[in-house]
Amino acid sequence: MAASSSRAQVLSLYRRLLKESRSFPSYNYRTYALRRVRDAFRENRSVEDPKALEQLLNKARDSLAIIQRQRACLAAAAAPEAY
Image (cartoon, rainbow, N blue to C red):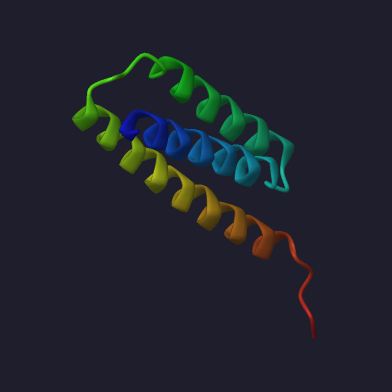
């Protein structure tokens, strides 16, 4: 039961990271973020230790928050000023 719930958590977080990464307004930022997310998850796909898995999940959650902040800042910077 615990393995399936952690797998569901990982997949959900992976999908959210990909979705947020796809929403970057800049092609370069978008492709970089997507590549980093995919590479990180592929690199750690064989991790089974619960402590290590929890650390990786926390790191991924932090990355999600960073991506969301960066996307918001880039969108605000690209928005035309209203006078």
